[in-house]
Amino acid sequence: MVTEELLYITEVADELRVTRKTIYDWMRTERLDYVRVGGRRRIRRSELNRFIQVMRNQSPEHTKAPEPHI
Image (cartoon, one colour):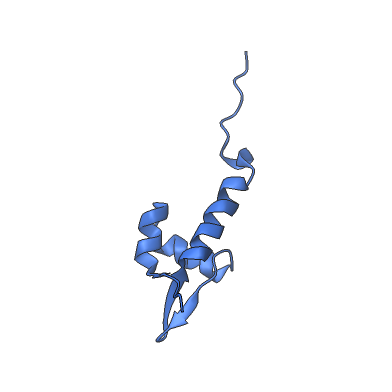
């Protein structure tokens, strides 16, 4: 039986270079799925990989710098 890696919130935050609060916000708004292990939240490696892929595929319109007016 193969078990999947379960990550701590801190590990996910470090890997994504965001705060733990951001991770908790994403979990609360159901953007990032988690499981409970002994009452504590963990994120499956496969879920983190899925989340990263979704974030990469999102339109960067909200992060684009405005076009210069010439």
